[in-house]
Length: 323
Image (cartoon, rainbow, N blue to C red; front, side, top):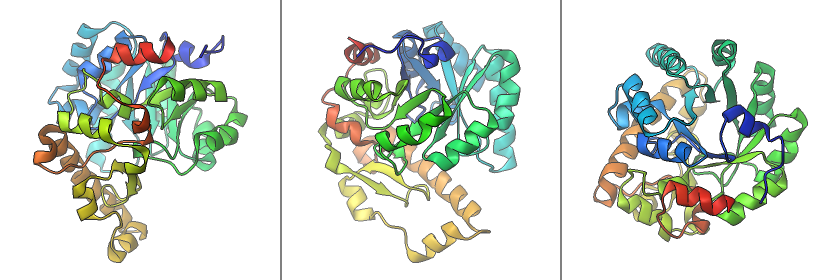
């Protein structure tokens, strides 16, 4: 599928193909980020993954990626109001990224205004994750350059709308729109470009890649899974998360208790519950990613698993999409 001339995402990102490797905790290892960018797509650094899952000093981690590729990379920033210590760390990471030459940023879960104000004078570009028209309107008002449209087929944190519905709702803003969710094959990619998206963001497909350091059990679970094996649960992070319905997940159950549900919606308690769930999910993801099914087979994945049948190199994946 030929990408239309004048594609603004390609201009914004400075890359050859409209394919993003989405930020993933803990799967965004430096080698994967670099391999995607080197192959013509855009690798996105997830700072918590880089620092806490892969044990890099943030600046040195960026410099290591730069040794592997001199092509553009991006940075993911979760700008939700949280603990002040995390917010301070986020601002330090942003400053370091700008100093190291990063100019493409994907924000999520909060108001991106302060990021835009910081990076735009330096030529920075900001796209924002959105799941519906309400959050898109807020992001557009803040002045973002494009929207990552997270649909109901995505892995990990997902939206509630189909790719088609999101496109119809958000195209009125006239911004570049990236389809995030459900793209695991050349056919999926071609369909989303034909539909009118400016590009796609892949997560699950790149976990099942040679460069990703995820445990082989994780990659094999993706290859074996079909769309019907992907389920949603709020028990991991307090908000809907898309995962593979493994034996461990079946035993754990998908629904939160009535008490937990009440606390997640309580005006004063929901913030603390989200922190608890975030810490818990970080621990679970890191352990299952490194130990595989010998720990707990808890694997985030989207409905794109239907198009994933083997572990390939990042370049093989991208070439197969755009050939």
